[in-house]
Image 1 (cartoon, rainbow, N blue to C red):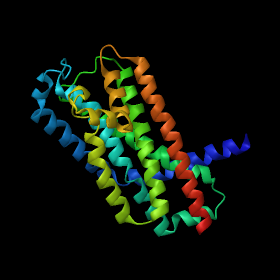
Image 2 (cartoon, rainbow, N blue to C red; image 1 turned 90 degrees about the vertical axis):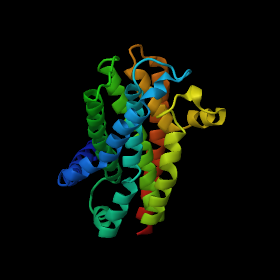
Image 3 (cartoon, one colour; image 1 turned 135 degrees about the horizontal axis):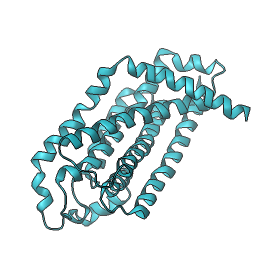
Length: 262
């Protein structure tokens, strides 16, 4: 019990340290939202008639359809750079100093995940608010945005943990940049973020069914509907949760590998 309390206490303080660093650079939060806002309103206006294509599903506006996709894409994109932060701490020697301190090793990794979850939550709330101000509707009530936030945190944890693992293993910025650039757009367009699955080619639908980004998009979109399919939402969020646990375990394993190498 004492070990659990120690881990939670250390996680609290280490998370506060990381959030303090984020608050010292509030402009970074705003800059990180420029791209999703452009996608939201540019694509929302440019492709607004897409909703009228037979087979799309009809109902609502394209902005309503687009918001869960933009939220999930932003969560994935923002967290895919987490490995750069891990590398920066290695290069500055900060991480090594923690390793010779009594700080809990589990708390060191937990703080990273919690800080990313808080940042993702704030960004998701801002996107949902901007969408609402732009005319989007959330007929599912408060439960809809809550599910969107949970799904964005889970998909962000998946890609953030993998990025941290990559940073610990390769320790090269160019590798992380290359991997992120290679994965971001293909994963986005191999999902239902912008287009209804019924209008995708068959092979795309099969890939999208295995894409965790698509799980987050569809869970959020269903929850925002007036009549949510809670069974399907639970399955997709459950899948994301299981995958997030696996990815965090991989990240912790690479952290222990790094610890043995120094």
